[in-house]
Length: 411
Image (cartoon, rainbow, N blue to C red; front, top):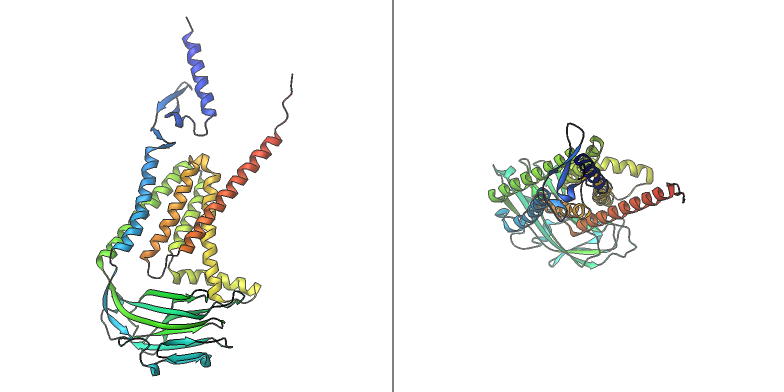
């Protein structure tokens, strides 16, 4: 008859050996290890696994997916604004041509009944401007300006042309005609046949007029502004409530993510990963006015060292680089530290892809931000490059570890 004590010791040794062979302890078998008062390792049942993940983690992924879908669907199916009435071009575009003015390289501008045209390159940038008055309003702060424009490219910009093309902007002015705020509503790179622009702009109590500005920034591209309109709108309560609910939901998801990192990572790892994810979330959703104020001083310091460049172009590249860096670092760090965090590779990819799609969808609820397919492509590329670098680092470490092991002596 076998000795019970020896059998128990053999079982304990077998359990310990199995745990050493699994990077997740005995989690894959549905058990976790607990040490009893006498030092023996005992098995206790834990949450059941489904395709390598416990039910709690599956619920989080489902919730993340559902929140992402709802974010996009709600923004396209809930009416955001109610029209209050047109404030420009009530009798059709371009209206009275005498109300338009030329500035800068004025000889470059043609005022015609079929549109405002900016022809050929000149030494100065060419500006076509028209100003409109806003009727007095006691609810100005609740009103917003909805501007649309249609621009056709007469002559495309050569690929070798370094100039950034043209743009359509709005200048918000007060009673003294002082410009309170410049708002870029559309950038023209000179590479597309046509540009359809739509932008909603916040107003403040001191705004009494605005100017529509159509200009060419010393580019060989030629453009024609063939249609434009401007109207006052106000935000509907249903959309406002939906936006609050969406952002509260994502705040809860963000807090759950931080809690998981806090309970599964060391203090240093939690600080690093939490900071990168927080910067990604804030950077993507930060209002453009704040982003410009934060980025421009850094960009100016770089330009002082490298030479002057186009400010708008530099800022645009800075934002795109920021997109790439944040998602690249998030993916790289999560993959390199996935074992202590108990995350699977496919789980990390799912989280990062949903995170990228969600952050772009959240921008649909911000007036001074816009969702672009190019930004999603940049985010996905960053995730891919982060995964490639993580796999390379793991492979190099494995090769180095194998080489550093001393050869086993044969008997």
